Length: 308
Image (cartoon, rainbow, N blue to C red; front, side, top):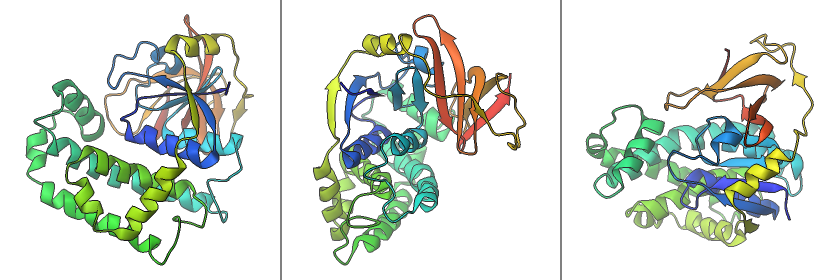
């Protein structure tokens, strides 16, 4: 059985991004379905309070945020590469577009267009997480034509890149940019009633979408959340201490720190002892009676680290 455990739920667009990456690399993985909104009692012992979806687990190493997850997948499974043609740095820059401005615009459109039909607790949770406290989705709905125009223009960018019989965004084989764009197309098509009509304007994009969908998600096996907790409890981190002495935060190995997303989505601070601090990664050691000691990993970009 694969050592890769993935904590997610089927409707999550960000999890779809990672599942698409599993397919590109042909991976086998273990699937743990988690609740769509808190509380998430069998996830918190692993993450120390990080509540966003998805989370990836290898033994006692817990990877939060799709940026950190995809980076670790490339490290562990370098072939086939997410970066055909050697475009690593460029692609991470691209992710700041797809996963920030474009994703938030899609969230605004999809939540506001369905404000009268989605469960109130889900609408409140996602609005606070991505759009801020006390957001009025009905007010945002007044801007739906503008939101559509913004998404339409950016879908045209992707369509232009794919014209001329180009199979995938970078090359003849799929790469990370395909996952970064595909999950947004998947989200628009499946969660907004106007999605299929909008996307039908872009024939090259729709042909590419079908190619990516056909690749699938690799091979998954369902396990329970308690089984995943037992795996963590029986393991220790694979990672040695690694602190960049040139890091501008000037933090020390073993120092008690807190990690939280930069944007204010009401996320709790995850605290622990600093174990890894590099230009792209931070990891902390923390303990919980249900899992023992785990190492929780985050990307640097988009996260704030502070002494506690």
